[in-house]
Length: 169
Image 1 (cartoon, rainbow, N blue to C red):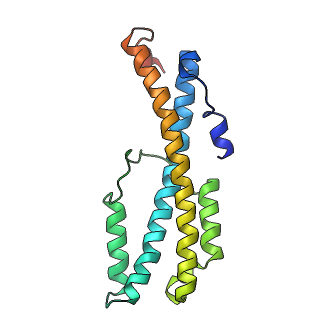
Image 2 (cartoon, rainbow, N blue to C red; image 1 turned 45 degrees about the horizontal axis):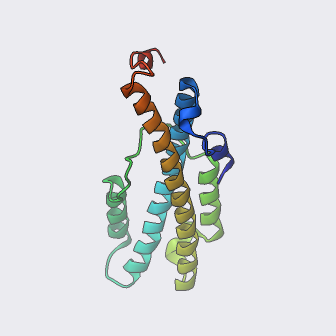
């Protein structure tokens, strides 16, 4: 787990938090999820491009066709995330994006068409491991975020929090 998770994601009973603290933690966790989601989507797209290169080599598909297929899949939501991406600012300077860029540089992602089969396999494995780790972290964050959200909903439903106060935030 990264340092970003410890400031909002420790296992604290949401019912023990003040309303302001509950909202703050939920908001911070949502913002961090935006970053993690971005890094995950970029990793998935890069992995799809590597796999597309492997498939292209065994067929008569051109590079342009392979890239078009991958991009259309990514841009039309071909993945099945339980939470759609939220609009966000440029997150490419985050540490996760930097880590993915380092992995891609180390395994020569920029020269994917020139890599031999073993190098392609190593590149795919490295990106795949990064994506799996980020996905696991994201799933854990969802569980904590869901608990915070459920507590907020409970408070509004039971009248412990005023819905009108949301407009003043």
